[in-house]
Length: 399
Length: 164
Image (cartoon, rainbow over all chains, first blue to last red; front, top):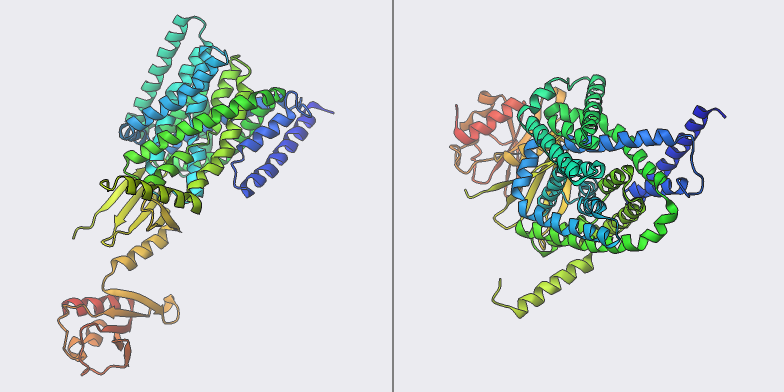
């Protein structure tokens, strides 16, 4: 059979399979991401039926998927929102960072993967994907709840931290000596700061290059700019994804709104391809061995996330039940943990990170979907009420 | 009036406005960036949780705001046939400080001034159909008038403030 024909058949069959799995996921109220990962695992290295002809297509698609994920994340926020979020929730975000990055880093060191893998794994356990969590909040009808702003501002700070973390990580995985690494990190951080400043001061100027009213030129223009900047960023060894994120932040107003409308279907397509590709390129025979440590780490970091979420809600003056809701909704990690792991693996770091991260994300998404709904159940609410009543009896002086 | 509406940012989504009523209940409005609104009613047991959210389109939200904001015009009951005829019925509560309180209906000269007809008066749950100019307006009356949109607005103004 001709190579291209085979490619079409493989891609078509896989996309169809993803569509069916996606519907299944929505029906049982889960995020489709773990299903895409599993599908990729099934057909990838050591899987049932390795796909040969379409490998390159999926590799390129996955690259575009990461870029679009980050670009749309950037489009969601204005630079002002990022700064306000940073100011208003500094302490909660700092606690969140420490409590969730450290277990990941410690785990990598414990497994003997070395310090750079520790930085990578710290990111995997720290960053919760705002897309997954925001969607969960919306599905559960909690957007109006009083604890929601504290959850969202943690997500904002994490997303902003991503802009610094990703280039630092890519500088680290590329850098050979300590000095080269340090210079790479310094360059990366400076570039990010400069682009953020441009976005803040001149975002409207950049937006003026695009016409918000014509869908096709807008799509082509924004996609072009995103990919161009992503490529240039990768060239100066700031990660391509970060370049895309910064372009997203720089665009504002109606241009940003309409651009995210035209780019969202494209993002959905290529992001799904990215997850499948990650599964494809992960050695599925290794995943069984990694499942136990990944589960252990997942439960530890679900706990630490719950504490940091509850702390943020408490600072906002939210009651006990609301603190539980804020903490548990942060449990799933999602796509950005996979993005970070993908970056680490692509640069030839410890190959076991891929099956580990896959296991980790699978566990957190499954557990998170269940845990997030827990505070809405009647018995949970009753238990919290009973505890509150008991606490009141013990110390009646406290209101 | 000690009414406070609190505004909270929801980064990436929009913002939320909260109102705590005198009775301690919380009502909130989540405004999305794309103009959609959610009306949220909070739980009594757990004042942080929204018990029910009602998504409203931009137009629906504006219509609801109109109804909530208009203290004099109680409701636009029905349009007589359809809106194209431009004729509406409306229930208008007689303002407590109306200059026509305890005056006969004829004093308002509503028909001449506003080209709208008062077709009934609701008093203590009773209907007085086709009131005559000599029927006296009492506190708590609800006047049912038929007219154009502008005419009905004029009736409401007339009852509240007297002739312009």
